[in-house]
Image: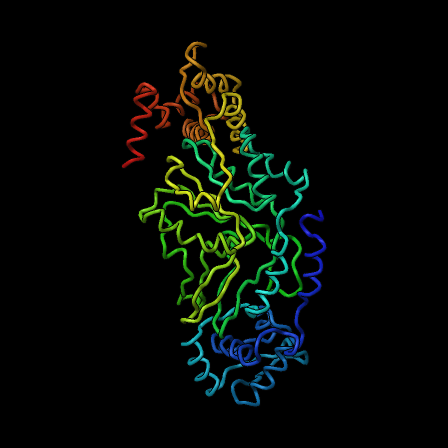
Amino acid sequence: MDYYHDEKMQRLFEILKQPKTLEEIDLSESFIKNLILKVISNYGHIKVNHIHEITGLSINILEKCLNDMEEEDLCAAIGGGFMFPSVTFTIKKVGKTQADHLSEENPYVGIAPVAYDTYYKIMEIQLKDRFPQKIPQEVIDNTFEEVVGNENGKRTLIESAIGGKGFFIYGLPGTGKTFITSKMSDLLPPILIPRYIEFSDHVIQLFDPDFHKECPEQPEDIRWVKIYAPFVFTGSELNSEKLETNFDPHKGVYETSPIIKANGGVLLLDDLGRQKEDHNNLLNRLIVPMENKKDMIYIKGAPMVVQTHFIPAFSTNLDITIMDEAHLRRAPLHIFLENPTLPEIVKVFKRNLDLLGEKYDPSVIKTFEKVYEPTRNGGEGLQPTFAHARDLAQIAQAVRIRKNEDIITSEIMDNALQQHVLIALQRRFTPALFDRIIRKKKDE
């Protein structure tokens, strides 16, 4: 679909061909030779083709650099075939001394990074006029295929993705706040990012496989990666330190913060107000990146500007008043999620059983429904949540396996309901008392 590989993306693919010479690549010759030297030093003996796999540098560039390094008495060819990729190189004494010194200053060994200036230019091209955008109906349908109900929330997410505006999502626990927000990045077009960036001979890691999902088509220059728009989330563990770019001595790289990893996608601050640190401090740290779409980080004391063109999303089970006006202006849209209806939770329950590959007796659904049916209709009148539907399906599966049964029966479903802590609490206390207990736990 053109939406995922439009004309701008196609032009960038043409630009990002693999550099074949030192004149074509955006890195300095000294940086490349130092990287190669560290690779050889780490392995002791290594074939050129293996160096190519580790660094992503073309064979032509490796041949030129290795020949020069051999003349400088840093390394030596000790065997291999007639083809240069099969030649094995080893480190020499002078090279080992130099490699050790280099590793103390910059221990990184891996894919060659992209020069900072190139990174910045390519990101500027991509992010210019990114919003507003027209999202194809097919993309919208695919995005929300698994989302049951929440029609108002879906509309707000679509409008947020069209205009690039942040939003605040709130409601009771278990109503699907994180789930529906996680779908939003699928509405956004993909983006190209460097795996690593070189800045003043230091390496900054940008690509994070935990948050960045690679697209099927990739540029020829493997230093770049085309990813689907990222969905980056943080929760109650968030603190100010994690919003900064910090050096990882084990990897030899500066690891970027969620603010930078979310560029081109969505950044969710989940469970706002549950952090040990004052949430206002965290929100204040985000104001400049949200407002300017750029942030300043420091590499060995040197300032470096990075792109932070993300859509901010804030989620909480608490009252919306925990955010002041200055923060709400950066997230002007809002979504309030109420408890789902009985038909909605039944649909999600069935879907979870199907995803688990569970077979079940038709009476299981009736047993499930009765828990949430109003008391006037002969039910228990408990409050349904989407989290109940997911958890009960998994608990019922565990009970079935424990009982060594082939299918989930009504009796097994009863056992699962008895095991679910929130259902047990609701059955034990009146709804009003149950709500007070939950609120007290939240306040603690």
